[in-house]
Amino acid sequence: MREELRSIKRVVVKIGSHLLEKNSDVDLDFIKDLSDQIKSLQKNDIEVLIVSSGAVLAGIKKLGLKSKPKTVTEKQAVASVGQAYLMQIYDKIFSKNSLIIGQVLLTIEGLQERRRYILAQNTLNKLLEMDVVPVINENDTVAVEEIVFGDNDFLAAHVSVLVNADLLVILSTAGGLYTKDPSEKDAQLIQELSDIDKALKFAGSSKSKFGTGGMRSKLEAAKVAVSHSIPVVIAPKEKGVVARILSGERIGTFIHPEKKRKRSRKKSWLQTLSVAKGIITVDRGAEKAIREGKSLLPAGIKDIEGIFSKNDVVAIQNEDGKIIGKGIVNYSYREIKKIKGLKSKDVEKVLKKKFTEVIHRDNMVVFG
Image (cartoon, rainbow, N blue to C red; front, side, top):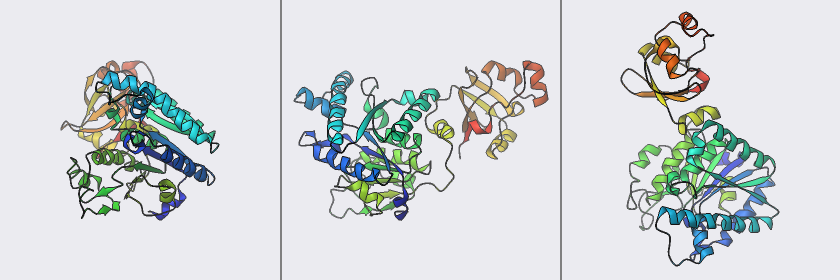
């Protein structure tokens, strides 16, 4: 799998705030090295997207603050100043390599809405088409806290799915996943990982078997990416690290992607970001049918909960109360109440319009 990294054409690089910091300031040398790598990679037709934290750090520096802000409001205000300053730094350094950056601010709420998800997707793809390097961050001035995305780990994972990346590189102060706290002498780097769930059992705290508390966030984020067949490398802050990873060098921890066909972008959004506005309970026959890849028909519906409209997302629940999937409905809750349990030929008589599936298989994801 490491050798296959040589064929990658689109990579998302996540940079945490701790990595951007050097002597209580923004590490300009690190950003310059990153710029040099991206310039070299572009010559080989490799596209790079950056997911960067550091707005609060940059704001502290710009405002000359003696201590870190404590309240959410203070953090948001400092981040507002820092975001502009951080982009100025990226732009100044990248421009020396004739690289153009484009700032993209995202929030979890924005990505949960299908229309805005598609707009973000189209914007990022267009920036890459224009040879612009997208620099993405959570919109800290309107988000409640940066930890909504786990220091941008989850943001990076969702962006990698959003743009159908070939690889997600999460740069970490730990430099990878270890058998013990990395500060211990006998701690050993885990070079490859296939079972994230097993690793998560040990990654609960800073004294865990697998290193720092921040590593749990990275593993949870990696789980999102690998579930969409995107490999992940958790790597250290070293010179030329991204280019070296893409050359096949064994650096950090390589997390294997799940070996299954990639979902469509719509189904990826459905699974990882969409918010269900209601629940449809189905009988065992309908459960069997949708697990076999078929659409959900009115005849298999036993009950519904919630108030939702056509084209909203709902959860699909079996008779045991287990959520088995999600999907986009073709009818409102009022209409489904009228047609639940009916055979397809009777639906048109009740609704006085042409019959269609309640949830088409192309607009559905099934869990487990």
